[in-house]
Length: 179
Image 1 (cartoon, rainbow, N blue to C red):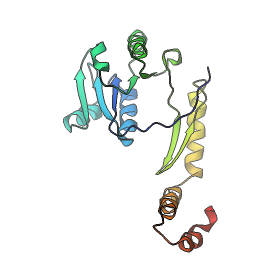
Image 2: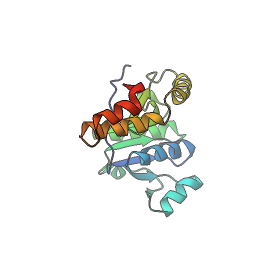
Image 3: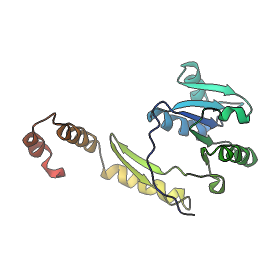
């Protein structure tokens, strides 16, 4: 299967995560960085997820998945260690035409999550279309070294330049190596 790459704005959008283990936690932590409003369904939660619930950073809305949990969701992540439950979540989400990712079950996904390098507004996505997550991770680690924090600073300046907020010659002198 081949996937079309796209970046989605998640600020304030509801993302349902089914599962409460380490994989779900990693997904939640990343989604929070992009401003998603997380609703989580799971019998058990990692200590970190419990802390996020207690701090009201995410919403624990149930212990057992029900179709009603999909109400208002923009995107769904099925991140349990139960293949049949993940498939049920996927089928329910797809009937509602929702975006669904069932972790480690590409046939139950209508989108996949790439490995990412994030430096402020610089976002580099690496995907093997689900064929080799280990290779994507290896490439991500290599790119993280190659693209350091200076790219975040540079893009902040370029954004100001584009909006007319800094004189052009200042950015050229200080960051000419990028241009």
